[in-house]
Image (tube, rainbow over all chains, first blue to last red; front, side):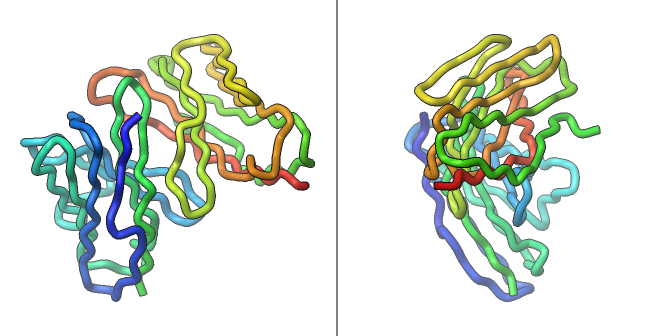
Length: 112
Length: 112
């Protein structure tokens, strides 16, 4: 399975600011996925990031709020823009090879 | 109706008990079935992965898939306090670009 790292592991941010989360994978993968896990909830897919093309966003998520970059086959970033307390969540990146998903350790975000 | 239903618990059992965790689903296209374990403040960790119907055993863990009933189970034998975590079922069709669909997760506490 893939080894995935994320930075930062946690952050506390002020409302109205933006935070960029980095995801690094130890192997080249076609698709990377970004999930949100709100307190006490399961995982909700934000978007799918393909290298060399625009990310595909799920219903309820928009590019202006969650811009994504995918500059190469091992790296992606997710930015949470103009944050509000409702954005306080764990943000997880994932890769899915061979039908199952491997997850990073997550970025725990608290917005004050 | 949600695509995947999972009892959120919490489920509390004494050490040594047999634990049964279950999910039901509605999408007959699902072919790949996964169980993830998520410890507090950590990302999900793949525990079991099965394809189509049948059983799969790994140590104290057994995964069962009954596609005719659209029902999957995870059994934990001789449960340990270290098994205390949230268990998430997930599934996909395995088609290129298909996303994972998660259950809401079941919180398990194993009492010493």
